[in-house]
Amino acid sequence: MTDAYTPPQSDMAEHNARPGAVTEEMVSALRGTKGWVLMFGIFMFIGAAFLVLGAIGMMAGGALMGAGAQGMPRGMFTGVGIMYILMACLYIFPAIFLVKYSSAIGRLLSSGHVADMEDALNQQRKFWKFVGVMALIGMVLAVVGIIAAIAVPIMMAAHG
Image (tube, rainbow, N blue to C red; front, side, top):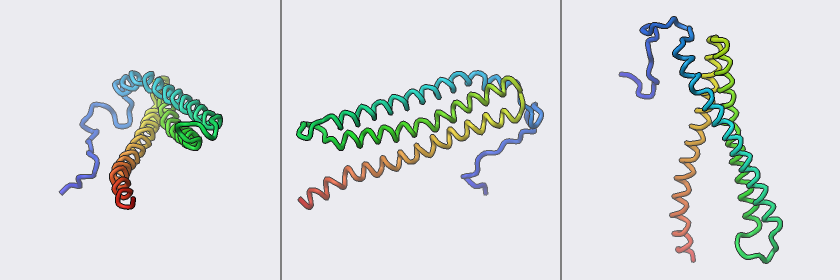
């Protein structure tokens, strides 16, 4: 019986390429993605910069608010600003992985060496690992938030 959690294996000997060789098909596939990967990495850096600007604006708005102003309390502006900065930090890591991935593809295109292919794939792996972990954390937080959104009003109604 096979383990359902074991990733599928492929017998590379059935392919026409030499083991360890970088084929033109591999290089062509990566050539077609290089620009898109770099563009998305740059967009993520730009998004992080906008989040930092938004955080500065939120914190400055909170500081400029008078003590008796209507609406959101001053501390909430600071809290939202800090949340924006944390989100900006989360954008930076995958952006770095994508830019490094694009650079590794560029090195592969100019050299054709297996080591450059391995580096490109390793950078891609780091990107998807980070995104996958963040997606799992987001799902857990969403479930906790849903439970809290149901439980907190019930508990408040019972005590109040």
